[in-house]
Length: 116
Length: 112
Image (tube, rainbow over all chains, first blue to last red; front, side, top):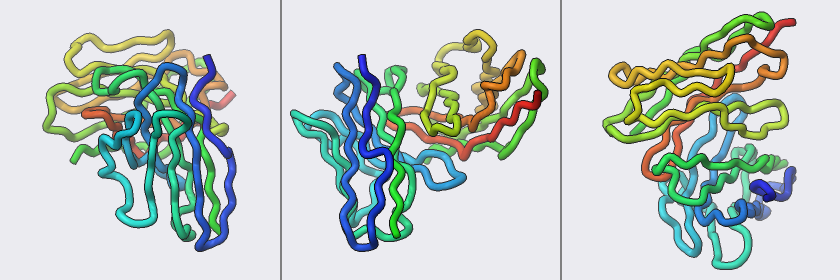
């Protein structure tokens, strides 16, 4: 059973370009969470999705950021018109059910976005 | 809003000795879950141990154990018989309503 797969592992974008980060959850997992980690900081919650639904996006910036988890295919975190402050490691985690029930969320290895 | 505080940015321990990493949190909820994650240089987030708030018994996983004090909102991690492979960043996390709040981490150095 493959773990949570994120790609690419490293992504370099120029200011103003779009960044697309992909996350394939573990098999059988229908809950996906995105987190952002700035240097020397902990992970900050961004968004929680189930298949075709956004459950909680309270951590998402209001502009330029969007996330989806379609019925088929990976979850996508999209950042439009990137700026240098978007440079960070973005982690995806998945769980078979809501982690409020105490289920462990399994993390991918992250995508390191660098905006130049 | 929930907050998680790790007051020790860096800690060091001699190999084979014991070290305790501290974590406090703030919440008005009664049901929640607490986790410790390890993040080595590879950046992979690895679950170390978890604790359900409704359980009074402290969780234990081999050399790792917690001291969970619900009234004090404290959740410290004890690592016994420290090994070189334990060197990493450790994050405490509070989980409720589908999302986790992480502390800023403690960097643990293990000296041979």
